[in-house]
Image (cartoon, rainbow, N blue to C red):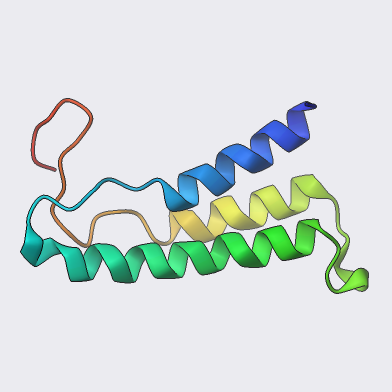
Length: 88
């Protein structure tokens, strides 16, 4: 796997691999955020696959697009536990 492909797949994983909600009350905000991040990933994947055919701007462009969209939607709209087990 080349570096561009690895970076793109890492961005897709970042889009869908957000921390689980800390409580049941946080599930709705978690689900809403995950939904919009998945949509960003779908748009990037579709473009990377050349759909529509005129959208082939290269894998690096689609990776940058996805990372910029994800930066606008960080997992800060709900309570969750960080990697160390503390509430974030």
